[in-house]
Image (cartoon, rainbow, N blue to C red; front, side, top):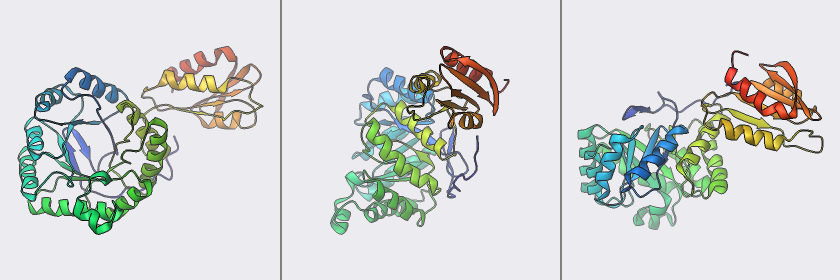
Length: 358
């Protein structure tokens, strides 16, 4: 795949989350968060495993109460990837999650409580050698900052983050990851741009409460895409009202579009028009569904007519250019053979499995 024009990445500190490195010395990491009842270990583990199948490298789990700590400890033991404990309001849950084996914790400075409580969390994280994500969210900005700025503006998000950073640094804690998420795409982008001039900690990026699968994908792709194209971001979570595996798929597609990371096969297809003489929509959809989470990231072009078909098919690793009830097959830029429309799917799958030995 052509990887020219890849955005130059902002340099940050690097740190380990369990066995996974984070920061500019490592690839941009893809993560998600479970939406099951944490007390249900089997359902939560199944959701983690499903997301991992599609490429999740880190998973976050809510710790809503003290009773969930036992389940979380079991999940840490069974999970195929490092687990992050998501904590709000009760600092004691953060300390309990650290002791239960969390590989990282996420706290929100807007609701975690007094400075003394933050210090206890920092001391526990330091003792166990794990990072803390300072996760500022526009929905839970401290009331003092809301009064100062009038609304959860980018400036309010940045000031909230800096207050927490300064306190943690006073406590000699420096394994910090930052996020400054809002549901307003442009405000979120501005907040991340502003914080890059103020510190060199790794950034977890995303648009919070972005919406349903369709709306959230569009809004997240715009916000995250802008940031990544400016070299900002070290780990991504696409926050959707959908299953975690969907968040993971979309994160990789965004990285792929910017030529940053490649995980899955990419099926490109013409938008179809009156000249199309094969069922491009059906073939492309079926191809994408079958290949799904396969890890050989080839480009497959499904083109419906002779206008752009041969040119696009030549540029792909494997491509077809449709004619009337038939198609010309290409691989590595070279025409291979003509086949009937009924043979297209079997031929594409066969060539995919054989690649690069075609």
